[in-house]
Length: 422
Figure (cartoon, rainbow, N blue to C red):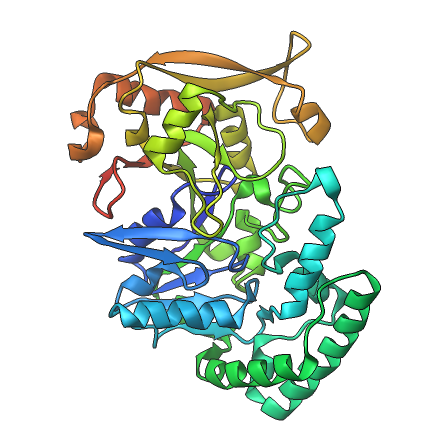
């Protein structure tokens, strides 16, 4: 059975959770492979709305084993709050597994995050201040504490106290917020005791599943252009959301992956600073934000709206080896008389090839557009491609022509079943 990867192709908020939820029904394991509680996924099932941050979207299916992979950084207070909320609403989290190799987040990581962001002045990158970057930095510095360390509580307590002491000294030297070492140690030892039953050797577990012909779905947080290597650096996250990160973040080698689904909204949004060639201002942008409810699940921040950028999407196809695209929120454009698609870039009046690898250059390009007629029809009742208005089908076919891979799923509403499968 294939291993499938689901990856965002823009700057996040593409509606990955809905597609993952849709695909999870045919998979035995759904694995989160990077990021932390800075990611927000929203799934709508009937009249129920579930906002997820760390727990993989597949938790809503009774037959799925949700897995937090080794590439994730885990904030235990957030994780257990999310588990408590889900179980309070009748969603069992007993099947959840957390990789013993995943890194843990502590209060000093959030304090360092705030110091770094405040120190940037007008050049802030728009971090969520959740401690994600500092936790990954500790991982790279080889001073982080792993989830598996909770299995020996005495050792865990010693590690936390030692690391907290060193972190506090450094925070004081840079004017960061202080904390009580013993209070942090006591609180996290209690959390560690609760985490123990969830800890697993997830690498072996996933390979055992593959060898037993079970199907595995790997879910990324954030998106391609927030990737620390391939995104609009430095306005990026601290990990690799691209499909290549799925291998490192789960321990599953690339030859097992046979399907890579790229999620793209029918328009573009981003949160925080950074260049944005197809950004919309004024009434059109406000309309997309209002109709699409474009406010962050985690932060509540208003997202910056823009037309769909096919240069960007084509680059995402290359970076992730996409086999297909799931196009979400096409219904948000139902009321528009005309719709623009960004199909190229110019610089000083001259066309440039591809997606720039220089953020300063990307900030100066101008997008070239093709204008399409709007369909002025409610798409929510559509369940087949043939039942969609001609103008909407033309939009989808134009996307396919420019990016070179098929659009196999089309979101036409917020709920689980509001989708056209081709």
